[in-house]
Image (cartoon, rainbow, N blue to C red; front, side, top):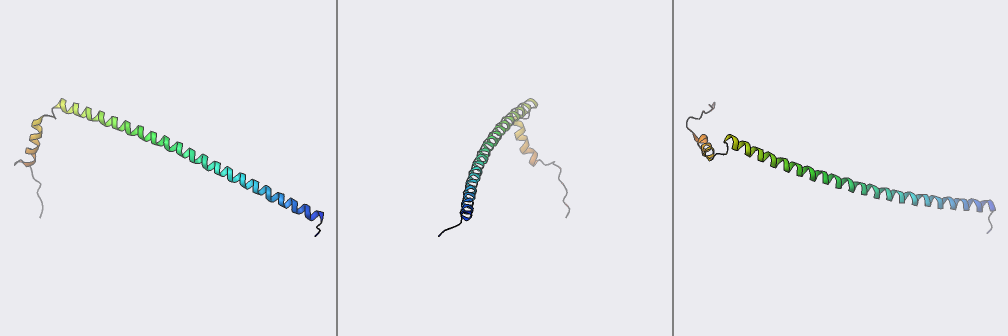
Amino acid sequence: MFIRRSTYNRLIARAEAYAQDARVARRAEQNADNQVARMAALADVQQADHDRTVADMAADLAAAERQVARLQAAYDNAVGLDAPALDHGAAWQSRREDKPRTAVAS
């Protein structure tokens, strides 16, 4: 079967256009895959940075809590709040007879 040269050239041009489209699509897919990989790597780096920041903040909080506990203990010692007699008095305060009571309406 014979075809015209113009038909043949048109078919060749169409085949080349399809091949070019396929190459562009493959390149775009590879770029998209590379972009996804870059985004995933960036997310991993950001997550690791966030984890380090949270760990540093937790360590700072623990150190601050220890310092507050030391200061509170020093204050309690300075004003005499850590005396054993106060512990015994606390039990007495809860059951003392002259403790004011709130009247309850019926």
